[in-house]
Length: 80
Image 1 (tube, rainbow, N blue to C red):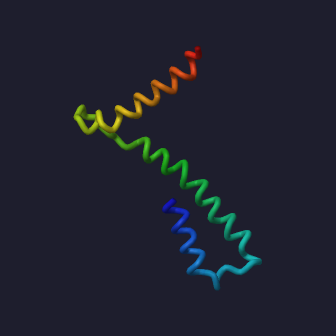
Image 2: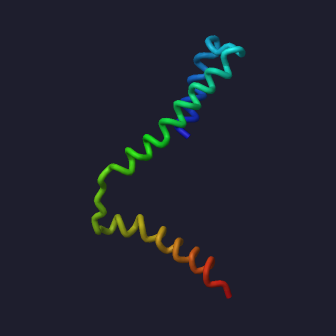
Image 3: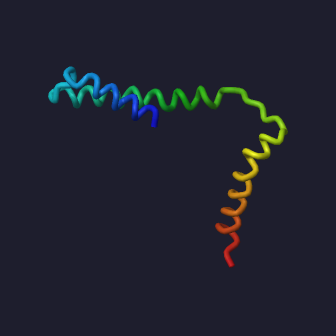
């Protein structure tokens, strides 16, 4: 959502510079930049080394997710 807000503000501030005849090429240029940036940022994020330490905060954050996943799996594969 931050990216959409930044894009909307960018367009609002540059209204005079964006002419209708150049709009298609401008959109194509920024769409290509977004398509390149997304996989690159995913690879960078996956390369970050994180450690999971056992603490009450970890349990509080991961516990509800594990419980809801278990409930979803039980409803998905163990139908009455």
